[in-house]
Length: 309
Ligand code: XIL
Image (cartoon, rainbow, N blue to C red; front, side):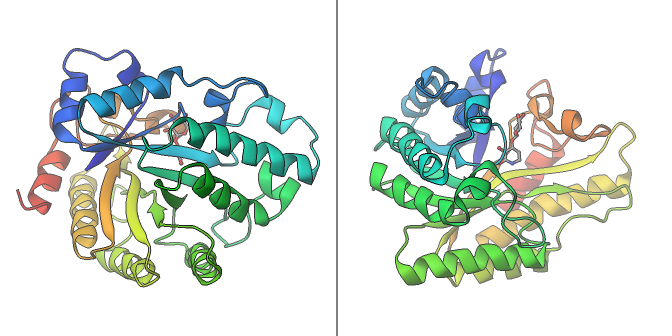
């Protein structure tokens, strides 16, 4: 079981870090390894905050994942507005990966190398990388990551893969192609940002999860549930929504336990108060395992019991 760490970790309330070390065995930094945070100007890197997270991981015997090396979002202005040619963008991408993955060589056990490269319709998403370089940026990024740290596991990470058939095909075809040509890739990250409507509908079913996990497992890659949260409308959450939310948490755990390839479930934050959901989806929240007082919620008990107690 893993979690994601961000600002609350960097100035923690009493009991927070103890809870993280007790409840989880791995974590992903939510924001501090994204381009805008780690590479704020073309000539500078800022490793202070991710280094502090790594020290915490090492002090507590936890694994740390890296997130993320090529994404359309949270990029610095110098990159977005540079007007760089395809060749220069390729070199910038390679240099960034050599510097950032190289800084953590042997220390981070996995990287989300490319994040959210496809639309729900399965097309290449319109991104700073795709526009400048074309689809080949994905392969370039994976090769550069392997070269910078041959021991780190390399993941392609995306959302809606369980429900958007065309996107699932695009991710599947990418991995199948990489496997057949020997392009390095070790796993698929299924973000799993789910929601449950007031009437209890909205999330993928257990069988959708199982079919998706089985399909990727058959490709011979690892599966990690990388950004799990299950939001409901709040305040005034209905009984059907609450029941549905518990069902979704238990379905994810059961589907993951049901396939050997699925090796980690990472929730996207520790407490509801540090979740970005109410900001991004006003009227929604309560998506995680602990409340603002660091108290275990019924979601926590459900996950524990699905894991076998
Ligand atoms: C989100 C973080 O949770 C927020 O704190 C930040 O403001 C925006 O990014 N997919 C991803 C994550 O891969 O990096 C995103 O995280 C959520 C969607």
